[in-house]
Image (cartoon, rainbow, N blue to C red):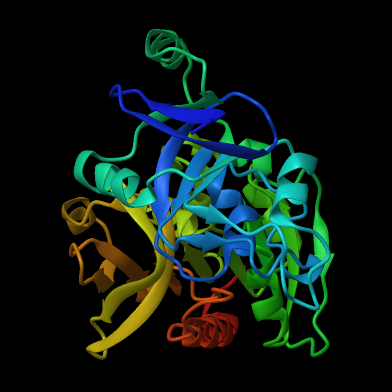
Length: 365
């Protein structure tokens, strides 16, 4: 078979396939996603910056790409790796094929390789650096490139908005400042639908600027990479604690925990997909959640903080939620606004609203 592309793992494994999308060579961190639908949202999710995503679902591309479904205007995913690609989408909403979008944004993609074997490798040995390259590249050449090339640490800086943007709701009951670390657009839509006006600010916005908007609450968004790579955001959140209700999702959950004095660590292969069971310790209910992260909060490190654990992952017992009742702050590791995906956790937006109502009565800013 005339394979024209391949990936080389830093551990020496090679996987051959066929290229489509942009014909570029790239070094990324390889991860997998277990979602059965939503490849457009995955491609356009800023949390996948610098990552090559292997889809466990075998057929990708069959419903095309629709303009209203993007999570960000400019996709920054590192690469997409699939078993089978369909370049003739059947969907009246489709405006472009996946191949056209990936070429437009210079994103490489490979199809035709054994994604089951590749995903088992990631599961067993963890995520690691890979090189997406042409089939003729030798293993020795590829390993040398991987040795010399580091995955960048500026992922949040890369995807965060560079200027302030305002998203008004039809009902105007609440006003929230959202700190953008790589924010998915459906988070804005979900808050607008609940009567929340949202002003989105860059990740490095200072405390004084955030408070100058006189918000009812502050939202900490999802985003890519290691949360310790954004110390300026952690410092801002640390200074906001006790002054305004705070709600964090995903990377925002990790940042809130760090701001309170907790610690984070990198997972072996992360959590990615729409099928993670999470237990709410406050009511003992099980929620099926959508997740996308490489790092987790260290539960032991929270013992010396005022945070309490509210949710745990039933697959590996990692921390999935924390709160500090007296400060009206809380966060969860998963995506309650997932689209498409499970909606079990959308009630947390309403909890944020309750905190903002309570904060108006008890907090002085």
